[in-house]
Every structure is written in structure tokens, then in C-alpha cells.
Amino acid sequence: MAAEGHTLVYGTSDASSHESMEALAADAVAKLGGVDVMVYVTGTNTPNRVMTRLTREIWNELLEVNLNGAFSLTAALLPAMRTAGKGHLIYVSSISGKYADVSGAAYQASKRGMFGLALAIRQEERQHGIRTCVVCPGLVDTELMEKRPVKPDAETLGKALQPEDVAEMIYGVAKLHPRAAIPELEIWPTVL
Image 1 (cartoon, rainbow, N blue to C red):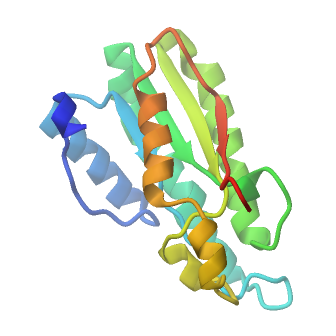
Image 2 (cartoon, rainbow, N blue to C red):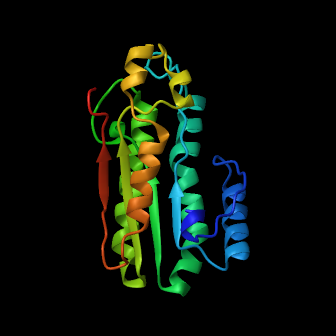
């Protein structure tokens, strides 16, 4: 993106903290003069994902990071986007947010919640030029694999998507002309 002349600002934040998400948004708006595209690509899971081991604390942690953080960052950025009359909110959910699998109730609920958030914002904010997209990757070889009860074997991970594959797709969505919107997009490994 920098090679194409885009200004990039990096920072750290705690996705489970509403105040931290507000501060991140305020910092980005102050440094950039506004935000054209937000990509929420934060998530966590737990090895204790089955209902016999899932506690209220684990449930809350997953909802805080995976869904509430997206809400907090979005709510903090929307006023500046409304004023600018444009914005693109891109949420990285998961195939697990669409189809039942072994990722667990808390993870699936949080990732499905992103659909509701994005669709509602699209309906409420499109008159302000604000678009949303939910990206749903299949298996991606990231550090989240360490939170599985049993990590996939090397052969399976060798066939998995790489973070760059998902990033490339997100960048393509972000570069769309403002007259075009992709509300939802799936990306799957070819051979899994």
C-alpha cells in the first residue's frame, strides 16, 4: 500500500477494551485527518471451546475481542466517516461465522455477530457513503492455530491459506470504487 502512495499509520491497542478502541480511532483520525478504510482483523479462540468446558469467562473474552472490539472501533470511527461522506468498514470474520464447524459456540457466535453488525451498518449508513464488507476466510495458517485443542498437522497447514492471501483480497475490496460494494466475501484454500 505504501508503494502505491497510501499513508499508513501503525499502533497497538487492546481489542477487548472499549476505551482502547476509542483511543486507536482518535489517534488514526488525528494523524490521518480521517479514515477511509477500517479493517477489523482481530480475533481469538480457546482450546476450551466445547460446551462441557466453555465457561462464562471464556465466552465473554471471545465476544469482547472478536465482536465487541469491532463495535467499539466502528462506533468511534463512524462520526468522522459521516462527516467525510465516505468510508469502508471491512470485518474479517470466518467461514465459521457462516457454517457450523468445530470452532466452538463462542467463536462461531462472535464471528456470526459480525454479519449482523456489518449488515445493520450498511443499511443505516449507506446514505452517508459508508460501505461494509465481511470477509470470511477458511483455514489460515496463523497463530490462532495454537488455540486449537489439536493443532492441524504440517501437511494440512501446508495447504492452508496464508495471511498474505487474505490481505490481498482485503486490499482488493478496499480499492473498489465508492460506487461498488461487496457485502460479503469468502476465501477458501483450494485443496482443503
